[in-house]
Amino acid sequence: MRNFLITTLISAFVLTTNAQTNEVVEIQKVVSDIRILDGEFGYDVSMDGDYAVVGERLCDDDGLGNPLYRAGAAHVFKFDGTVWNHIQRLYASDRDANTWFGCEVSIKGDWILVTTTAEQKDENGANPLVGCGAAYMFKNNGSDVFIEQQKLTASVRFSGDKFGYHADLADG
Image 1: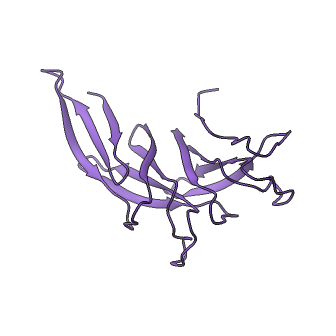
Image 2 (image 1 turned 30 degrees about the horizontal axis):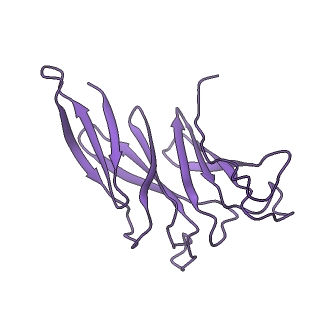
């Protein structure tokens, strides 16, 4: 049996294959814990084992209940053996409006990678250039809480680079 995700821009569907018939069947529809009009929940998705991460690049929430236009978010789900539960919403520690955090998401083991292609600042929060992009690494602390570990940016940056436009985690 193999699980996978298919998305729309408002929800994601966890699907699996029936071992006897090879038929694809829906297990569960997952949605954001906060419904935001045009947030693009499901813009990118990734699964590894009992965990899934779903990008919502146009989320307008700053994580504290305040509006922050198109700052973006990523949502972490965990399978408990019966259902997929929303366990955490991830944000960039230096989030700003219009940065689109959640454009690309990837999960591998204890690590989650989330990109923001419209990020302007470098890893030190300085030297703004329009649309340079960045990637953020989060690690599971062992209690299903993913904590930001590092912000990654290109060593040579140019306006419009969109660093993180495509990204994936791999073994190694």
